[in-house]
Each structure stands twice: as C-alpha cells, then as structure tokens.
Length: 231
Image 1 (tube, helix red, strand yellow):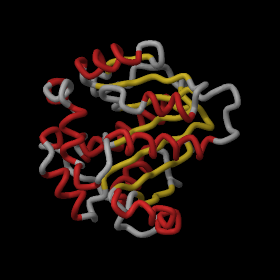
Image 2 (image 1 turned 30 degrees about the vertical axis):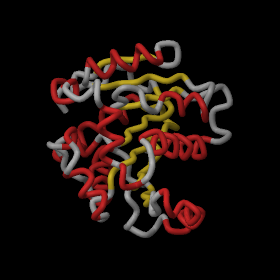
Image 3 (image 1 turned 135 degrees about the vertical axis):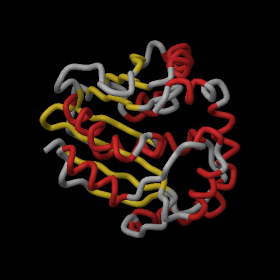
C-alpha cells in the first residue's frame, strides 16, 4: 500500500468506482451499506454502550454514513495510507469519525484499543506475503473479545475478476482467495474464522436476493466475507 498510489485516485474515487461496477446495477453506496449492515448484525447485543471500531483502509469515508445508520453509538476511527483520501473524508464527516493516517507498517494505536477492525476491499491492495504481519498488527489493537471482519472480492467469480482488471485504482491489485486469507489469518492469531460468499444477483434480479442467505457456502458470489474473534 503506497500513499501516492491512492492519492492519485482520491478525488475521482466515487465516480470511477461507480463506472466500474455499472454491470451490477448497483452504486458504491449499496455495497458499503450491505457490509456495515452485516457487521451490525454480528454485533447485536454485544456492546450496549457502542463499540470502538477501526475502519482500516477507509479511503474517503464511504462507510461512515452506514456505521452511523446501523451502529449510531459506535466510536469510529478511519485509518488509511492516503493523505488526500483522509482530507476528503474529514471534510465530509469530521463530526462523525476520527481520521488518522497509516504509515503502511505500524497501526498507530495502543494495544487493545478496538472492539472491531473492519477491512473492506483492502487486502488485495497489499502484497500477499505481508498479510500475516499486517493481520497480527491488527490483532494487537483488538481487545480480548474483539472481532476482525474482512470483505474481499471473490477471485472465483469471472465478473468480479473482469471488474478488477478494468479498474484504474485496482491496477496493482492481486485478488485473494479465501483459503489464502484463512492461512494468513491463522498465522496472525485468528485460527477459527468463518467465510461466507455474498452478492450473487445483480440489481435486475434483486427479487432473488432473499435466497442468498442459504447460498453463502457457494463460492460463486461476487464478494466474500471473513470474520474471526481474537483468539
């Protein structure tokens, strides 16, 4: 992850993302919404006073409104390598989250600072050999009962692969299989995670989406999630 790489696309990120996923019939906001809604479902009843959440690789803050929608009492920190992305996010959401720059190596928080760390579409931008060390660093800032949540593009879905290959800000991305993610997470101290596949039907077939809950074992969804408790 390099600051300059993401700074180049920060101002046009939303427009480029929307163009890249046009075939799905959905907006970037749809994908941000469903991810945070799922996180909120996993946390139901666990943190009555509101969890401390780290949005790792938050970019321009696309997920911030949805954390406020589904987890209104959470204390949210947005972390990213891109200074320009953080500037844009802070300008839009300065009262709703803290925005902090990541140096690409050490997460700049004390041990046991967060209840949940959320990474959405981040790890495919990080060299695969660096994943275990990065996830171990994330584990360090999680509390003893904390949770790691990862959403990634599914390399087994041909439409997803095409979208990534044609996306300017994914030029240096390398898609990550669930198996590789699980292996790196286990090395980092997350040995018992759960993988679920998601987003099987485009907007035109949205009436079928209630079926997706029963399909999460099927490795054909456009995306997948992985969540694990700090062990």
